[in-house]
Length: 116
Image (cartoon, rainbow, N blue to C red; front, top):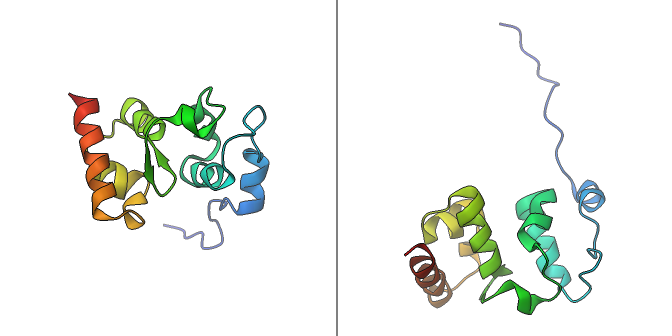
């Protein structure tokens, strides 16, 4: 079996990321830049799908911290089949690294309500 040590998939670096997801997002001047950067980092060009028609942070639902809003959790449940708080916080967003215990518990309560 031949080895191809010099062939690697291209890495998406910040300048390329900006080309794929222009900041600020047109028609969304009220969305905070840290949120847009976090969504671009977590979802790439699919960040547009996460945002939907949101024009301001208030349109994204409850805020849990670490740039994680209810809208993103809803997207993860509907499109990526996230089934638990651990799935959202540790596997899909890594937001659990930045949230305190109370915020993580709030995400868990939201998901229990959302999935029931």
